[in-house]
Length: 278
Image 1 (cartoon, helix red, strand yellow):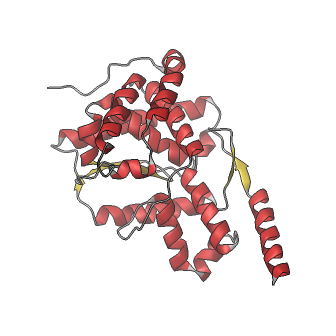
Image 2 (tube, one colour):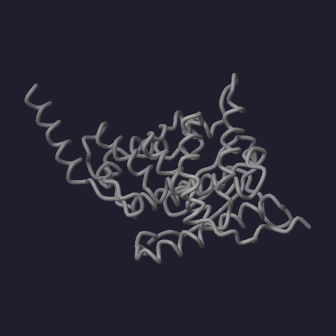
Image 3 (cartoon, one colour):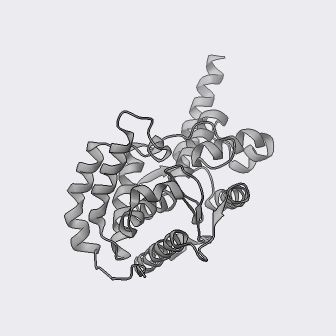
């Protein structure tokens, strides 16, 4: 029995080692057992199901939904240009961007693999302006671009199924695989607990999300008052859903302040392309 356990442990280590890839945007080596094309396919299916069971607010005649689309499209344009300039356009292969605002009081937002974005209406009371909204959306988009969900799902596959390929896991244990996906990405109608992002994941999302917002012409300095509002919202109360996987604390704010001057200097060029107030 001990020999079998050691053998399985050895196989898991080999699988993990052979499946580590270097992420194009962060430059960090990470565990990716799941081919991006497969996880995008699962994401598109889950996204469609989510929209069918939640109230999507049309941007036609709704300024909040129009604003979410406007900010999202500017971010996508900036990201596409950045990847093109860096010779990394292939990293966006399969991305079919979609942005939706849903009528839900939760203070939440997320971006799935392949560029499927959702903002909950409850978040807008805390963002308060386009700049802060861009900070949040840039942060969430970075989680997708940096393949943080893929990393978490791969860790789950390694722990629960010995690192088998997703295709094998889906064929043999579809329910377990679906549960892993939902736990990793936190999307669905019957989700238990979403796995929190690691400190490293959060640092990357903060850093590159701030950069993408600045590249899109939004003021990255708005990140500080936004996260302070989020910290205040959780003081002495149950934190918003957004904070269950995105810790808001003094360390984060200090980290953002430390990178702010460099971000503003290197990436921020105000465009003045905010939506008209009229």
